[in-house]
Amino acid sequence: MNIPTTCSGELFQFGIIGDLHSHWDHVDLRQFASADYDLLFFTGDLGGGSQDSSLKMARSMAQLSQPTLVMPGNNDTDDIVRLAAELAHQRGLNQLLSLTSSSATQRQPISLCGYSEHRIQVGNRVISLIAARPHSMGGPNLSFPEFMAASYAITSLQESASRIKQLVEQAADEIIFLSHNGPKGLGEMEHDMWGCDFKADGGDWGDPDLALAISHAKSSGKQVLAVVAGHMHLRTKQGLERPWLKSVDETVYVNAARVPRIFSGSDDVYRHHVRLTISETELIAEEVLVPEYGE
Image (cartoon, rainbow, N blue to C red):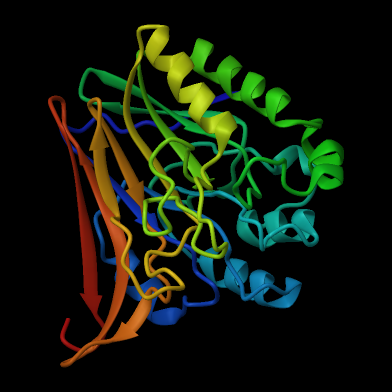
């Protein structure tokens, strides 16, 4: 599925909001309403693990004015149709992967994404945003296999990798991957970017299907500009800090899962997200801490 999202300016401002876990409210709505973002991306895990909390978050997020993509996380499997309806004010499984353009005077659509392609244009530069596997818990096995089979006709990680590779083949020459969990291959220590911090022997908890798709893109001669995900919280269970940003072989990897994303500092309450600024010549990633009271 190829659904274009366009911006023909010299800069494309891409806001990335990590796993919410219910840390989202009217203050965020006000702050993002005044922010100059062309597109927002939520990495998933909207609520606190219950259907009601996820639906409450979606109901609030539906008031955003910018075009927005939401990658369902492992906490977002309950009643996915109602979740999509809350986000997009529409019902039906046929709306789950939709993202259409509208005039500046209309409310921009907000949609769940997964196994889908979305294009942005920055000047003469066309970039494909490829939304990979939704609902990932990470690790070597397919998460929620019955749900994935019923919702996406995916029964194995091999089928998932093939689906993402198909998107790569129809994509533009430059690609940014969007996912809930990051790819396998960035380290096996508990404090690595997607390393396992909840097992004594650690291990690489990245998605193998996403790693295969990234490799396929590069071997096909396409440039993978960035891989954007969350899921593995930046503060590990051992109290260590994962890197949120890493560059490997000219690809920028971003883990935006600072949890909680709303936190008290010494002088204010701060709200975290990541900004990608894309121009015709470069991509810059930076953490953004927005003060609640000192705006």
